[in-house]
Image (cartoon, rainbow, N blue to C red; front, side, top):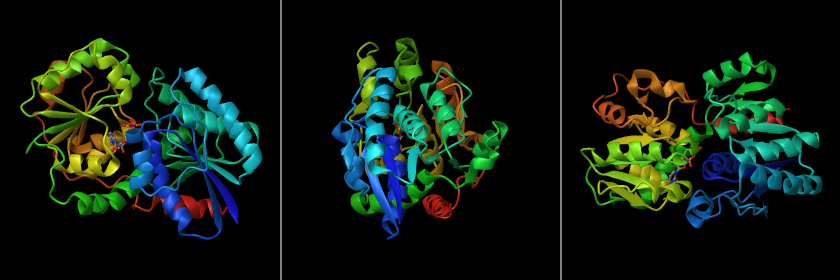
Length: 349
Ligand code: UDP
């Protein structure tokens, strides 16, 4: 019997952890402890994902809530240490690149506990992104690095981490494959929004939300598009949006659950986003993506124009809408069983 602590705190982590937790629960030789840091706490940013994706209730909620990067990280660091001392896990599983990931990895590493990083080796090479710092530090204090793609494996090797790296495939691909049919069953042909044709957009990266002029430039493009732009609004963006006055063509909705999001993706014409996860999900669901950033960690999606990096310039965004993918999508993200590979590898250590 081994004991695994799954620590999560933000929306994309619930989706990644769901795939792992499902595989753990198929087995009888693993005890799972789920810790929620409380980084995301609104019902539609947290609870809905546990319900829809059938993730067990967290055993512990650290309740950190919002705060500056330092405050959030410090609070998780000190409260998670107490949990670790009590639980004494064989493995601590951390996901992605949030403050919860960084703080959990630091706390575990100082206690000499074994850490596995799921979604290791991602790099934007933009250190202004808080996520980039979180990824680099987490990779370098972890004991095993589960890389979703060969590109991530190569980047880890370039940092001297080849010996700890393992090409597992992408748990987000597992999640889409598993949940797509659940979503179709739940919603059938129901249209999630009352538009036959629309673009699906999300905007929440700090680099875009902290600079109203960037958000304004993005919204100007949305306003001039030939179809309505449906924008499930992230709480972080809500704080800036008052300053930029979105126009009529931008259809703001509350953040939706994962199954609704998959349906929105399916029903949309194209996707415009600065999200990491959504770039890939667009690719998995065969939708062209336009990325509202200056770089991407998911460079594979750029092949054959399935994704393009356009930044925030209004004209460039509008220009990119005129392009189409030029070929078949490649197979870069594993076999849909990344979570099985991860758990099997951990059991063999
Ligand atoms: N997502 C969702 N509802 C929404 C917006 C996003 O379920 O209203 C999902 C999306 O499908 C993806 C994940 O949240 O799986 C992406 O999270 P986010 O964009 O917050 O983070 P990032 O991937 O950029 O780290």
